[in-house]
Figure 1 (tube, rainbow, N blue to C red):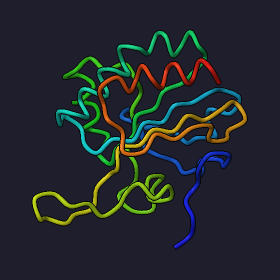
Figure 2 (spheres, rainbow, N blue to C red):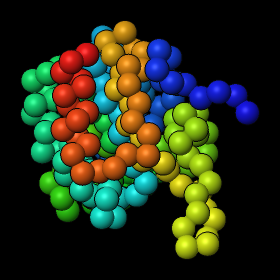
Figure 3 (cartoon, rainbow, N blue to C red):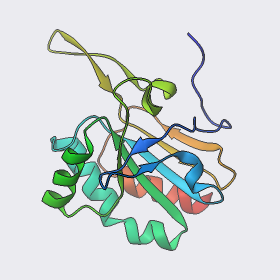
Figure 4 (cartoon, helix red, strand yellow):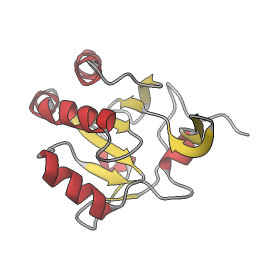
Length: 157
């Protein structure tokens, strides 16, 4: 198995579908700082909190010149419903079921819960600099305070 991209590498330039039927990929943010936060599933407690927290700070990210992008493998339609239900302002994208960005990053992986094995997203956040290179990675994120921590790191970049 090959090594996955990390600090100093560029994010793989893999397109993802947006809730409005368009597409987005990391190179669309060239020349801009970018935070990509990967989360397991819409409308689950931790994922909802994480998305609400990033949305609450979106104005501060905007003022700091930092774009946000939340990614899960939920469908664009599920994202539309999730956005509407929680008034989310941080943009979301749907990663491909197979061969997507999360696969390339090694964060779509086998997980275990209550003795059950399944494939799932490891909650991970990437801070990408204006040069398109990964500046910082948060692995196995704990949601509480995470969005604020990412904002501070992005401002310092």
